[in-house]
Image (cartoon, rainbow, N blue to C red; front, side, top):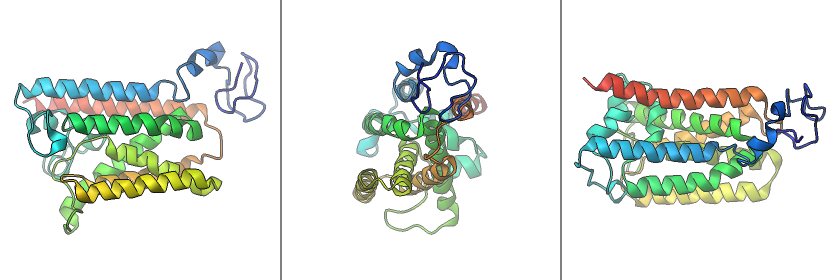
Length: 272
């Protein structure tokens, strides 16, 4: 059997991997099945599928009254539906005290182009990050990016002065904060390992993200900046130079469960 962390041959029933020290490296014989799902263990397709499903649900909840603001919100749910499912921002967090929306907002999208661009970016960056950090740590970084990004954007709208193209948001959604967290993790990987290729690619993506943030309307640049910082800090703590542990996967499952639970809580508490 192949150890799920370092790739060294181990026994199916070995207690620990002799190379990296991971407990139960053969996963009771299920390691080949999990590896067949890819380096991300199917977690990235799960996130993409969940975002698409929730997008459809918000459209249904809109009752045909769809958003018509910026190009990114064309064929998107209306503001009431987004608020119902867990939209974040200064108003939900500070006025309605829906603090958990920093978790739920990353699963919501304002329009068809919005979700397409974000899911394409996640499809490209997610498996790469999983190759360097492992699937569990990738999900942790993804979640940390969302929390840090939406928290910064919400706080900036209340406590920081607004500048052209840089201001906090009263209402904000989208997976781009989490995706910025993956970019931050790739940047840290490039710097900590000395990989000039990864560092250069991450820098190119950051420059492109900043450029589009300045030329396109309604882009939450604070969420991107906070997501990048949250992902970078999480990557420092998780340390890509060490193999992924079993508890990382457990924490990742908790992150996913908490994120989806935050959407349920949003719907239940907003229905009245």
